[in-house]
Image 1 (tube, rainbow, N blue to C red):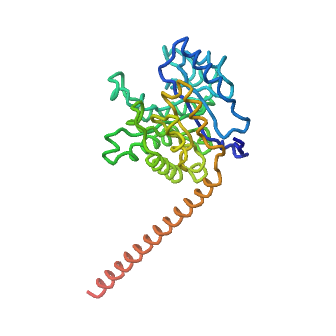
Image 2: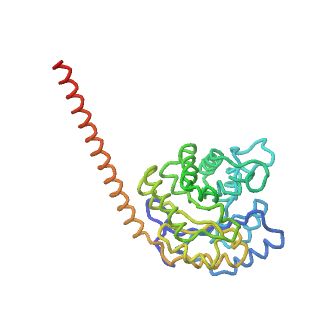
Image 3: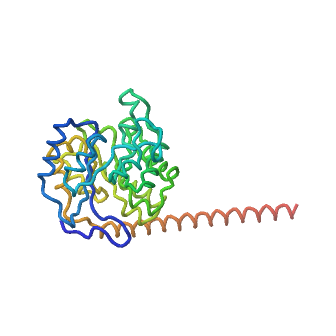
Length: 323
């Protein structure tokens, strides 16, 4: 898995595989799972994949002391409170960062749609997700920003509208800079595929990922569009991982149920041995050219419209002067 993983521009050039343990793990089962993960082959120094796991907050310290060191640790959520204080029950980004946790998830669908799906509490809003992203970045953490549509939104043709609205909030509310996008991974998680056993097809995943890249191109810049890693989450298993990650805009996975067993190691092994930066750079140049052409057409159309409007004004002046 030899690979040039990072250049002087600070961009990580690796696939990304995250394991979200969700609300799972007894004292004994976590110990067994850590033993299973530790038994997997060690990632080479220049591996083509970066791996994180997100245990419950209660199990993070055990994992920090016992889990293999080539897997980073991730919080499943952080508070909208900043730092420390009289915030009973909250866990802030600063608290996690101080304990050496370098990643967090923000906006997982099980939080965005908590009331809709579980009839508990409330749905987490876009501004809350964006604020958590900002607080985590300010605390020095990296963030997996989740987005995705439910089945009714997909059937209604609203999937991209929903997804891009979720991402736009991160841009507008969190004020993420191009430099900070290097510390963000976008996880596309179709809600209808999470925990259902039904995965989006590789073609469906690719179509959404490509449109997210176009959005990044238009809203941030071309370099960010090419190198922000966009990963897929939704019933990822060893049997479908290789086919999904073969798509050119799929950069890895956020794994749920399969992260609780040796299947997680199999998903990691599905990742190609080399992160193909050449194709990404070529696609970036193609997108730049396409956008330039679109802008030229828009300018030409505007000029033609102005020319027509000027001709109409001249004709009206001539008519008035002749009356």
